[in-house]
Length: 547
Image 1 (cartoon, helix red, strand yellow):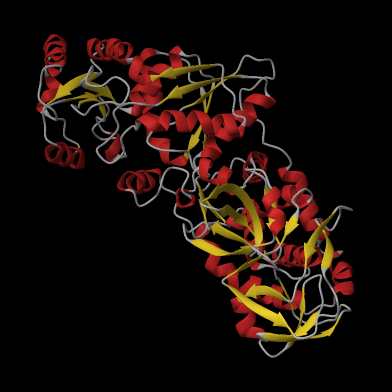
Image 2 (cartoon, helix red, strand yellow; image 1 turned 180 degrees about the vertical axis):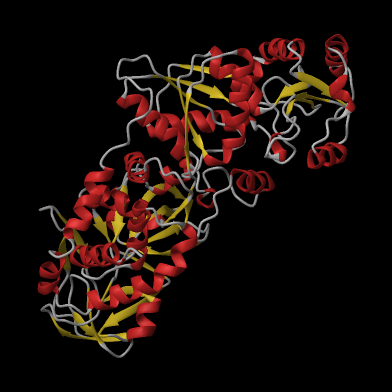
């Protein structure tokens, strides 16, 4: 399974980075249709390939790669760009819709569908509308007032444009009108049955008695619903009670809820399900193409059923698989709970993995776009290493991000014999001519872990000189040698770095960071890319992006 591709990407990865990385190989294999359930099967093959590749001398890897490069070349040609859409014309007559449910900030997983809509809309010069899917939701998934702004802000930052915005909470009377039409057509009925009773009927393929009342009585019962107690009745659509999928049988179209809505308060008590409101709006708002997740296939079938009742032309519906990030839990519901409880300090807490949190960490919007383009219209759910996004972002940041030195948990070491080095001009970036001047006294600070690991050994203080590492260190030579290298700072600035797990790393950074502007992204050498967030009580606070 995929042996040639694994070997090809292992060689390519080793040539590019000096050593093959298994995480990056797995990420590439998803492009070949690797399913999440098959990851464990290919891991031994990847391990064997990496061991073989890493044992090949660097000069010979390029020669070895020649045998496999056509495998990669063919795949790149096959996947180049987004696949064409059925029923599409590049003439501006297409309409896409963005339909987020405002229960929290968008995260990198669910933003993918909205970005695909936007990318296709740009490609086909189509119209895009934003429909806030703010029906009342469920007890566990409710609309949240702050989410409206968070979603709009995320779209703006990602460059997702739309022509007009609609709110479903403003369109209830439209949905009521079409509910009555369905009842008058004999296609919907008011049901008083309990969930347990309905579940039993569905399993047996039996229609409940509520379904048999004549249309006149159904209309009267519908009007009475507006005065009934919560959960006393629902409006159901009539389908075949022998449909192959029991969940499709007589699904709910409207329910009663007394929960307060963040936009319209308690103005309405009868709320449509998402598929009911979608079916009506996708027709009335003239949507031509719908891109949505595989998890909404049932809703799509119900929409089509309602469109057929009204004899409406179907928009083109394209389903795409979910994107899961390996080792990371993406959940708006969980994040909403943690934000409201105070466990997370807000929606930009890095543990939410929201678009706001990624931006604050230093992940660029163009990196997320490129990440989504690379995934494309995956038909099945896939798990992608977060390193894939970091790798793209790293390429954008590497050319412009200046370098600085930082050490966490610093240990102070003194020099016994400084040979007169008082300052150093160190390049701010390997590819730039500008330098940063660093003062050197009779001591420096180093990372405690480096100190414990290398104490008593000869090491090189990066860009400076070589010493026998100890609290009283002896300088051995100036010239660069093939010995372990560690970071250091002289008179450091108190610094804190917020990591993706919500924990802070504290230490000292070189004084050059005092010139940074808020929002500037730099690289702490041998630590990673960070974004300067703010100065707090004399301490410089950064957010960690990635290695």
